[in-house]
Length: 220
Image (cartoon, rainbow, N blue to C red; front, side, top):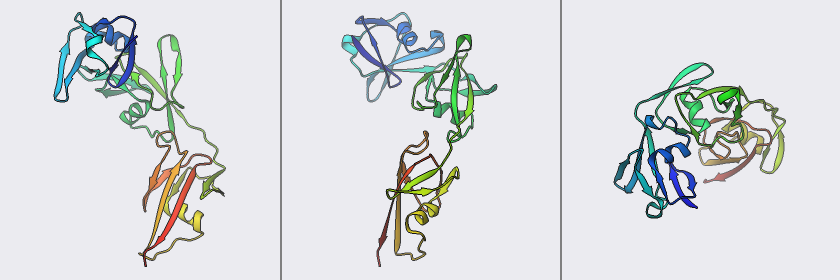
């Protein structure tokens, strides 16, 4: 098999030679006439590949191709028209383009024949965007029972939590001494940001049994 990438997504072909049209088709970018296919020549730029032009994958290797729309495309999200420019987007990017909070809503693609494809558990999936792309959003129903702070379960039922609230769960209070520094890291968070860190003033969405690690440093 011969491997290549289109907009950083991996594909394969059983034949060493493939046309520009076939590359776009395999990537789900249809109709192919709506897209410009570019091949990365080097770090400085790309060269265009015509639809009927053959590419020798034995020479191309896995450096990859870039496909761009000739003009912005209109997709539908909850029956609202949304203009996008990328031909491969993640569910998170689609939700952001539609100004929908990805911490609260997941994305469902409506394909031909009314087939529904949910991306609730695959927020980094690359979706081929076309003029017929249609999506609906679905509110994420999560029952929050507790969070885990410094390896101990702490009762928590709110959908959001602040930096100060996490620190208080860890140490029962929070110091106003400027020499006392708190560090908060977390894992198993909401799909849009399953792990990360928090700074003073931050407020983030909570996932059930989300894990926080809080440390306190006294520089005095």
